[in-house]
Amino acid sequence: MRYTEGVYKRKRNGKIVYDGVLAYYDEHGKRKFAHRERKTHYAAKEALRKLRNELEDRGPKALENNVVTFAHLADYCEQEVYLEAEYNSAGEKLRGVRNASAYKSHLKHFRDFFGRKKLRDISIADVKRYRSHRLRSTRRGPNGTRVPIAPGTAARELQTLRAMLYEANVTSGSNKTHLSLPARTK
Image (tube, rainbow, N blue to C red; front, side):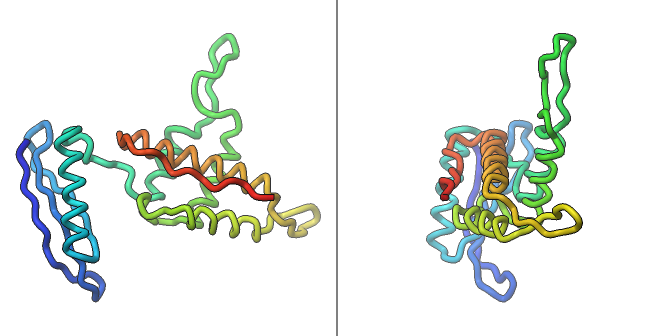
């Protein structure tokens, strides 16, 4: 496996960061680059070491990650996962989901909250903040009134979020464990 690596001091948004760069060749012989920005030189070297180990263990395909931000993940799920259900002649579901509009609604709320945040930066604290945000939100009720969101609605949304993050983990080819969501409290 041919690769080169280095850590370079950079200035981003007025702050000093260390950019760890791993240059490698994919299976077609094309040169590719993987970057890991960290606050310290040592942290950048450590991130590069992990990246290099992954490259050596699983090959160049492991470093290609098409789903980077939450917006990318939401687009992918909308186009590939949460489609209207398709049935065969016997009435069995072949693909898609039975109520795609509910999932599209969940995606709308997720996009509003997480925006263009990187997937690796989403933490348990962010998920808890999302749940709190949703429980403080209201929806349109009868006669134009505002009705608070039920805890069950927030729980269903969190289940969708967990499935999406698991899907991102599976599609990226990672063998790491997926992000588990906090237990529902009463």
